[in-house]
Every structure is written in C-alpha cells, then in structure tokens.
Amino acid sequence: MAQRQIAEAFPPGEFIREELEARGWNQQDLADILGRTPTVVSQILTGKREINPELAKDLGAAFNVDPQFFMNLETAYRLFLAEQADSAVARRSKLYSRAPIKEMIKRHWIETSDSIEILEKEVEEFFAASPLAHAARKSTSYHAQNPSIDAWVCRASRLARAVSVGAVFSDVAAETACSKLRKLMSHAEEVRHVPRILADSGIRFLVVEHLPQTRIDGATFWLDSQSPVIVLSLRYDRLDWFWHTLLHEMDHVRKRHGLDDDLPIDVALVGEDAASFEDRPEREKEADRFAADFSLSRAELDNFIARIRPLYSKERIKGFAMRMGVHPALVVGQLQFRKEILYSHSRDLLAKVRHLVTASALTDGWGQPLPSNL
Image (cartoon, rainbow, N blue to C red; front, top):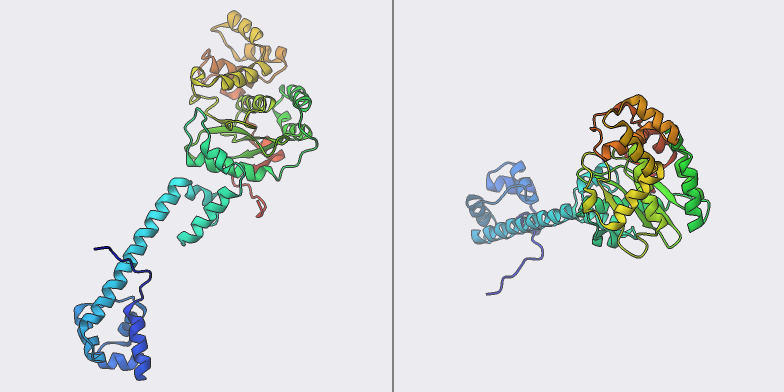
C-alpha cells in the first residue's frame, strides 16, 4: 500500500476552537465543563499540551463525538511535527556538510537564524554571489578541498571587487611590480607598500584570515582576463612567510595560472606543516623556486651554507642578509626550509608584519570590522 504524507497538520486545538465558536462558548466555559483550569484549556488550544486518552474521553463527552476522533487528530499532529523535525535535521546536516556555518556566522559572512529556510538561503546567496563558486568547488588542486577552503575563496572573490587598481594588468606591469617589490625586502616595515605597488600594476591584493583546519596560505584567481587577484591568509605572522607566499602567488599571476585552468589554492606552503616539495605539481615547484630565488640567489645561498655549516650564528645570518640586501628573516626561513637549522633557531629574527600589512590592505579577519555591504 502506498504511503500518503500529510502536507500540513494542525493541533487539535484548532478544531476545538471552531467548536467553541459554533457553540458560543469561551475558554472558561470549556474549563468549567471539563473540570480543568483555564491554563490547561489554553495549552490544549495552542497545542502545547498533548491529548491523552483520558482527556480525549472528556472532550468527546463535551462535544458529543467519539473520543477516538481527538486521539486521531493528536496522533496526526504529533507525527507531522516529528516528520518536520526529521526534515529540518537532515537539511541542517546537509548545510553544515556544505559549508563551515558556525565560522561563517562568527565572521559575519552570513546572518544567523533559527529558521532552516533562511539559513539555506543565506548560504545559497553567499556562494552564488561569487563567480568562483563553481570553480572553487571543482578545483583539482593537489591539496584535498574542503568546504572551509571553498568558503574562504568565495569570500575573497566577493571582497576583491571592492579593491581598486590604478592600471590595466599586463606582463610588463607584472615585471614592473616584481622590480619594485625587490626593493622592499631589506626592512620589515616596507611591506606596507605592497598593496599599492600591486594595485598600480593592476593586481588586486587583499587579506582574509584563514578558517580553522584549512592551513590555507594564499590563492590566485581572476575576476576577468585582465583582473588578477592575490589573497593571503597571513596564517603565520612572520616576514619570511609573507614574502615567500606573496612571491609564490606572483609567479602564478605572471604565468596566468587559474585564468583558464584550476585555481591555484595554496595550502601549507611553508613552516613545519608544509607540504612536501617532492609531492607538489611541477607548476607549484616552479612557483616555490621563483619565490626562493627572487629573494636570495640560490648560488649565493649554497655558497653561504657550504662556508658556514653548521655554525649558523645570528651575526653571520645578519651579515649575509645585509650583503644580499634582504631582511635576516628571509635567510632564516630558507635555512629552515632546507633543514639546515631547526624551526626554533633565531626566532627573534622572524619579524612580525601582520599589523603592517593589514593596515594598508583590505582585510577580513582578526576582529577588523568591514562595511556592511561587503
């Protein structure tokens, strides 16, 4: 026998209310007839009190109907509520599997609501508003994708449109930007000029704090064929991380990665949790090489290592950095990456720059308020 599903059920109180009106009775009258308090009658009418067999028998006597009538109404209504609850649970489970709902609400990316319908609409509009929504989810990056990464990229793509640029991007503009960036690498404070230099070359730059369990460092995408975007998470607040990740993304921009193929979404580029260099696709290796060689000549670094190993004192690191025209943090970072020194070595040389970068770039995270239209 085919099952029939009730489209909507009403509490028995709705039918009782109609009978009261038909008879010209009020709630107090029914309370007196049933020998119960007005509060109990009110709860019956609003569906807050279930009708048990004893109450069904009294109601049947009061309205001169079979008590089974009220039991049937009560059963149908409670089954309907149970089915609705099951449906809401399933829908909420599906929603939480699709996106990091709790974090998105916490970061004010979507509005909170007790209504599953409203919450579903919020999430749908969040992803649909981004031109990268589909591309981000189908990315075949060597890093396993997850809903948090998808949401992070979609948020970045929405914010990127609010970043102004002063020129149309071109290959010449990219090389000009690289030349200007190289002059900033000797002092940590100079990173504050990065957003302006990139904007002058037609490259949008912004910062979006990473979401928990993502380990995402940066991404490169395009709003259109002439509008590249670089977004960093500043997951690690250290100068060498900033420069390596930025230059890694710059190589993606220079080679127009992500314009006609998979989005370069870079996870765990540097640090103790960095992905193995050998396991990365060739274009990721090339971007890493570009970033490393850009800041320090490989030949010069090899020569330094051959002469100094294993006596990497802070003074020698500082001296080599000065001769190369870079901040000592960049030397420390590369020595750590090559496993020449431990990650605990010379940590005081790893200048913090998050406060400098976020002060000059459009930033979403760390409690910084953004305009409500973003």
